[in-house]
Image 1 (cartoon, rainbow, N blue to C red):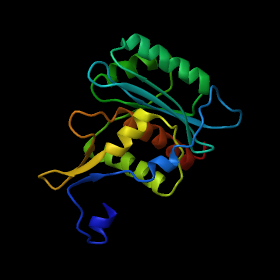
Image 2: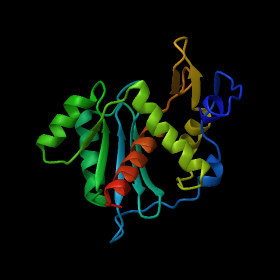
Image 3: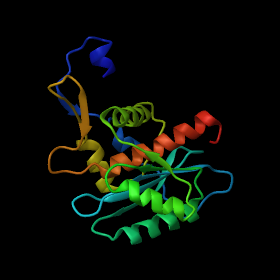
Image 4: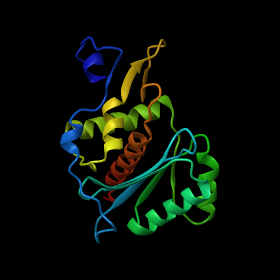
Length: 199
């Protein structure tokens, strides 16, 4: 976007969004919270066609340290897995996608006492968190797990210009971007925490 809007370069209408992905895949998983570290969790819901993905970032080290990915799993079980992850890492923020089935799940989890930060995904809000993720890779400010599915989604994730002139971010037709969205939401939580002095 910067190259096109500010440097007046011609950029193809479709193209890869993330660079230096392989170089960033150096993080090691953590089984539990490290004392004194701040964590954030990004939640992208799915059930049948799509996957639900929960991603944990250690905001202190800027490393992705855990990811849960599931498909065709009952929402009750998904909620239970999220509760377990929250108990494991005690995050300062849990950024949860509100769209579609997200709203009733958020309401139920909040009734159960979980502190959540709902995130409404629009074309604009999605662009914001994706741009932040791309910039983190570009600046080598984020390490991720060497996970084949995640790396595949990051490499195929693309930007397309709509007839309206707006940009659309997402996976090519027939592919998924659930891991990318969960990672972007977790990083969003980390960045928000840094702004407020939590991380």
